[in-house]
Amino acid sequence: MKLVLKYGGTSISSAKDIQEVAKHVATLSKKHEIVLVCSATSSTTDDLIEISESIKKENKSKAEQLASKITNRHKQLAKQTIKKTDIQKKLLLKLDDDFTELLALIDGLVLLGEVTPRSMDYLISFGERISVKIVAAAINDLTKKSIPLTGKELGIVTDSNFSKSQPLMDTTRLRVSKNIDTLFSKKIIPVVGGFSGADQYGHTTTFGRGGSDYSATIIGSCIKADEIWLMSDVDGLMTADPKIVKNAKLLKEVSYIEAIEMALFGAKQIHPRTFEPLLAKKIPMKIRNSATPSIEGTLVTSSPSDSVKNTVKCVSSIRNNGLIDIIGGSMIGTPGTAAKIFTTLAKAEINVMMISQNPSESSITIVIKNTDLHKAVNVLEIELLGKMIKELQVTTDVSIIALIGSGMRGTIGVASKVFAAIEKNKVNVSMITQGSSELNLAFVVKNSDTDLAVRAIHDAFELDKIN
Image (cartoon, rainbow, N blue to C red; front, side, top):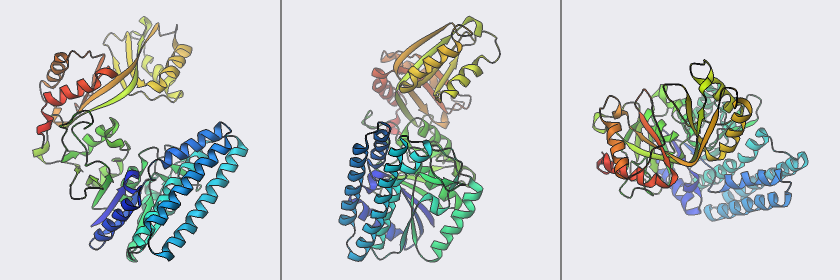
């Protein structure tokens, strides 16, 4: 089989972890053609983001301290991981080149006194550039041939929308398939840095947090992989967050559309666009735990078997949001009201997570992240208050609770079961939405009621007995 394996940062953050990954890949490569996609090691991307914040505050010494921390950590990791002297020596020389370039970049950004979206993408791509060199060296240490590549070197071409770029799939498909076919013919295992590519001018771009998953599915689509495995520190997708629900169960199989909804509602922090490259090719994906490769994990397919078509698959939650009631008599029957509200918010780069409008059209309720709340209220007041909006009512610290499952479609009584369970636990609901697809039912409660609401629904639908 052609397999694309993606390893998250927690799976490659110690010498032992990397050696285990290398062994697993070496074993699989005896029977299969493998492409490895790796994230940055744990906390590295956060440190690189902190470097950018230090530069913005003109704190060069703090930025250099953080760069030194990254350098020392990875040099130590390289020395502990690689046993053969010649391979270790070559690796340390390559890493030194990266660290020299990182310090030169920091000097340049300090001189400019600013961090642009383009330079930010270049800066935070260093995490993956470093990690893939160590992982590839670990595979070489086991006498298997391997080569580290950035997304740019592999041939992933994107638009120039820095920090949230999208691949130009036709060009990418041609370049990636050609490069990987050449490596496969030479029995070389490519280890690719996830999360990034390059625009048509060769400037490094990134897909945003969780982007390594997206890189894996882009590559998988390009080479027509038989399967894609996302290897992380979780066994797969669960019926609920096990930190909230102790008897949460592993989901054996879900559909692409269910997995997309779960990603949007925070499951495993999967990049929401991860599944897009798979839809046309219908490539199966497995979400598995790198620490326990014997567990099959969750299989994501285009059409799951009938035996797993439960009414509700999981209950998820997103905390720390704000709710804004936008009220105004002049909104009633006025064409373009909603368009003006959402255009105003879009210009301020504020993402609206949920929307509800009552039939009289006298009010629209939206949910956004707490961090965007102050900015959202400001722009709405400046642009629209006193014109079409009469009043804004704000509620802070609310959670979105979402039930997800394609089996809800056409099933009578789902909503009544949900709200009976919620009422029984004396939880107040501020807002409700359900799309026409009936794939998810979402409602809003106070942050403090989140755990209670999730447990109540998990119990009501007996999700501990799923599969």
